[in-house]
Image (tube, rainbow, N blue to C red; front, side, top):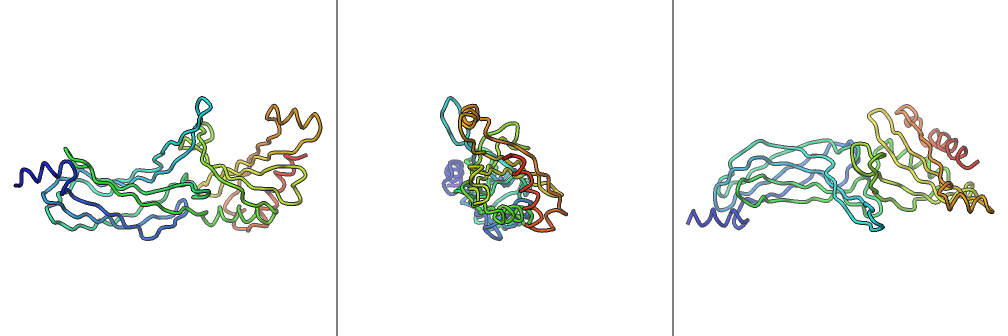
Length: 258
């Protein structure tokens, strides 16, 4: 019977099972993610080479005028070395790791999840998936509050492939805003790409300008109506609050729409 149980376990029938339970369902980039991996032994003893967690997301890539979705592993964390899971065992393995700074915010249905897996030799590895909400951290929230103070309203967000601008990952998250009344006559849209650092945040600011007449038409035709600028905000800047950051952001925007 044991022989047949081993055969069945190798194809996933009666094998060990896992269930990851996170301490909470919402995190911000850089925050500590904690939880417990529960393992229930199956019908036979199995050697687990390791237990790992992956933080994963998706981004859009364009090729030959077609768009398709690719997945990206933001981090892979091993939480234990090899262990023996006996039949009927019930194990609890706690874990904790920082959510990568490159993790996108879950705006506009952007998906981020924690993938748990066991490496078991000569068997189908059991897996578990837990979706999480990723919200702005305290410093990033200041930037969004600053944009709101200037009258900008959130439009949409998307993760797009970009090998050059992506820092450590193959994509960037573009966060777009409608302009408020003060800017509406001179620009169509504001786009921000945030790069959290250990001491502040760098922001790539893109302003989609409005042009008039033939010159405006030419700029749109040649993609010259977009202006890119960098805004580097230290932790000290961000600690001064949204009004201070709004002043700095406004200076960048004003230079772009002149």
